[in-house]
Length: 340
Image 1: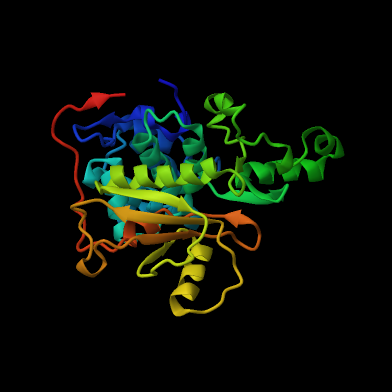
Image 2: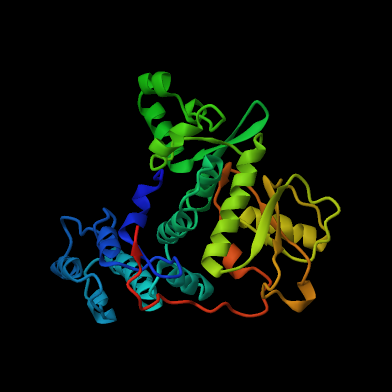
């Protein structure tokens, strides 16, 4: 099997009988070893002691008083966020259950932590996927994208990588000449898809989202897999080119701009933003849909910011569907599970 997104930590988990990822000590220790979590040289004794204790036992209970005793205000906030995420995952027993709990309760967490969880869930949901267009498009759900127009088509590249390239260009004329900016990145196409596997963790391949139907179909497939795996829903998502003639009963914005566009359409108002992605979600038989919306599609709208940045909010898919009641938060089975 071809591997991808190794940095997600998927290989550090074990699957329960339902195929969900158990929260292992190895996964928790990997998070504790991240540069953002390691105490800096000037950290107080209390922070160093807390980190050392958790490295010995990553499941150890940490009281609010222990966090409050940290000298640095930023450290107190960062540890509070990390422990909130950890405790939710441990209580649920699985990464998927913990993520569902956090987003349905609308717990405030930094985007970097939510993005890590989304990447893990997607990595598990897409395990065995060989369609590189789906995998590259799925990156949009946990990594912001920076857009530029080339030959009339919207090209999306990893926003963090673009920022690094632009910083190099500003610092060095030679780097600008040799490397170029976002437009110098390889764009995923029929002839270079095989290179994705060796560079998936570098996020160095751009996506022709505006000009390649396979890219938009890939995002539809990724969102379908995400919801089927995470929420156990039978559904299908299809990429569209227009909402003309659509019976607009329910919509979801896949980002802030998409939400604004949808709100304007709902009220019959004009809007100055243009969607870059339109999708139709249809529920399968037996899905717990509200009675007044049974048999009707949900329209999904993706926009782009004025700065040409796309920042998807996959939690909107979880919290905004017209379901007749809350889904049960399933926990890990008591069996041993299987390793990857």
